[in-house]
Length: 137
Image 1 (tube, helix red, strand yellow):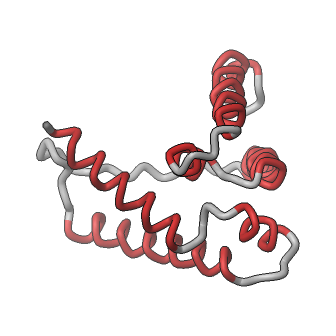
Image 2: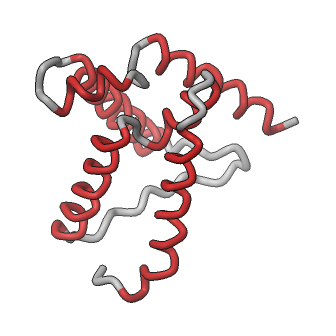
Image 3: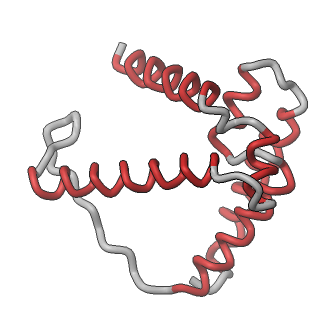
């Protein structure tokens, strides 16, 4: 029964992304060609919302659903790995026309060719898990 609230939030999130056209291949295409501010606006709103949420969690010592304090661990410095990871993520996003979250939304909307995209994303994650110890972190 606890999972029901997460499913409901997932459905609401999917509806919001669909209605805002954040899952639209055309909107993503426009973004990567710098032809429209639409997707950048959505991303900026997400960043601002995240920053505000993290500050509220830190300042009010909010606890998780089990009553334990939420610990936000500082990230270790390292810009090269973030640039390389970001480039791979961005290339995949640009080539496929969808980032990982909307893959499930588009599948639910009936765009069945995205099964191949989902398989590729899962395979890439699996492959990373196999070789991550050999990569420079």
